[in-house]
View (spheres, rainbow, N blue to C red):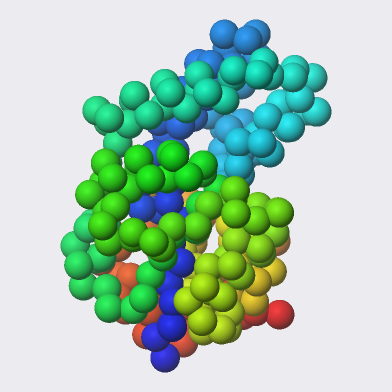
Length: 223
């Protein structure tokens, strides 16, 4: 049966933003003498909140970031978004046909999530339906954010479907006891499914999404 609630991740699922984010982060870190590439960003930072990213840079790369780094990074990223941010291919027609209740749950800051959805023309559609990592004690891969969203809508976890592009998000969905689908149509993945320790069904074209909603095979089997 169709889910009672669909939870969309934002960056990499609704917004084709991850390549832009990686570009800005790599450039800003280079200013601090930290050299990484897009593969490193995808492997270590995809789907994670900025505090987690900063902690990884400090602990794994041995380089604590200055106090103003996050502000500088966000300002330059949002400036890039103004001219270059696009929805993932085929997203908007799919949302027009979607009848199931839907919300957004993202590791992004409230300000970035709000601006991202506004630039995509989706602010009205998801008004009052945006959940960010700032609202919970533990972000993805912990299940807290998804459980908060489901509880707000009165949806049972087993009747909730999560659409994610990152391993932390998909792990969080599994931990929450929710079904999940891996969306791989963003430019940063190019159709390649994320590396996970459990099976998950993936898709790279929003045109097939309505059919997946009715599929008994979608996503993970919660354990």
